[in-house]
Length: 376
Length: 264
Image (cartoon, rainbow over the protein chains, first blue to last red):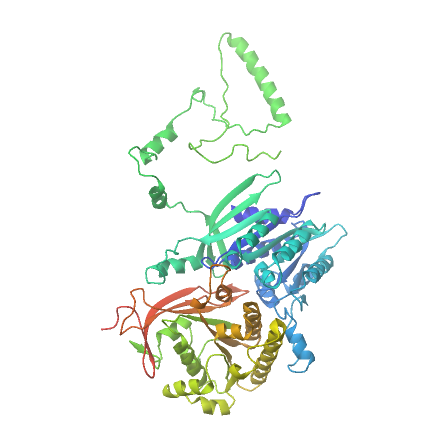
């Protein structure tokens, strides 16, 4: 499943000699569920960090859109206690006073210098426009959570859209790129709202990422009809469910796509395999005089067909060649074939075709690349 | 057919405001979007009255930033609705900031605009802090009428407006306030750059859109309201988002809300 694949990639972290894996989570106002995905990924990574299963030994969270208290509560509700959080969590607080207004007012005595209850290890950022300083803060806090010199930490930024309000796309891209190439960063992920920015900004962020997770509406309601009682159920549905598509960029440049659905629940979100809307797919088939799809009966009959060379009738189960035979396997096979050869010699004159199918049944015009699983 | 005076008003139900406390809880931002054909000002007036008229909340304060109209305008309208803003102002329950007469528009560019905003924010924070220290304090309300004129006052900087809203929002979460803003949907171009209104829609917990009917003008129905209530999201869990749509008719002293087709 896509979400699990993302969590695994972030957990495994950076390979030697490679930049850290970077995830972009993007959504839009018609499917504003990106924040839920961010929280889910954060919770998963935190769980791996606290149980020492991940390369990252800690996480530095840059909070723009929600308060440090919100994240502390979120992680505590996922079975983390405050003491444990202090060991591996650091927060750069760009939420409370991002432009230093409260500090200025407190200094001039206009307001009281009342700091919000800080049960978290949050470091206050008073100038969100200075990305160099932000980078230094992140790295400094990251060093506090790693246990050994060659240790690494993860970085999460809850809103790159907020960064882009205060800084240019080139500075933002530079910040993310520098974090990604830092030798103490295990992985990083961020959220942005694609409809708040120009195409070039979105593209720039996606180029820096090794994974792009996109949340899209389940139902298309932008039909120009405006708000009416017919649209309402669909719009409401889009607030609770979404299509979750992930694009993984492999080292060799190949792209892998995965897709599923996400549903919001009271305690977070749930990912389910995409539901193939049979009716929708039917309506997408061009209307011609010959049949392009298989009927149910035809599908069943096709499944029952035994392929040539597989109906030896010898009772052996059908094998599928997986492409990677280990040395020991081939040795065993050699022994077997030698035995078979002897058997054959004994049987004198009986020929035999040993056929192993190389893949499972594939529908015609399938887009699956048979070489996709190779890691050359 | 329900009037704005009845306890189970459709608008209040959609907002999730409990009638006995006169208003919602704190840490919320409510965005009202209207158009030239359907002004959303009546929603603002209704909410002023709700927040000031609750008997269970004698110490709650409404901080009102006006860029659109003078005090007398609101006073006249609220009087017809049975609420005396003059008295509330004297009792320091209605704190009115006349932004129309406050060095506006700013002449020395964005730096001057930011300084102005800083001083306005300082006044609001001070008022809210003072109010929150009083006994029996429940909620404060910060209202802005309206955002597009605020942007004009700040030399067209929508970014500064968004910064200000962000600070108001964080103040709201700290002191349990409700922030209510009115903005016009049709003044922003979406051709060149993404609309700043979209930023506000992301930020808001509740969005109320006042739009004309799809079928056009009508004498008995002045428009439709769509209320999107995203629910409360705290670290430990989220409530479900809800969306409601109903029609309205603005009368002399009140507003009627009703579901389509329910009027005879």
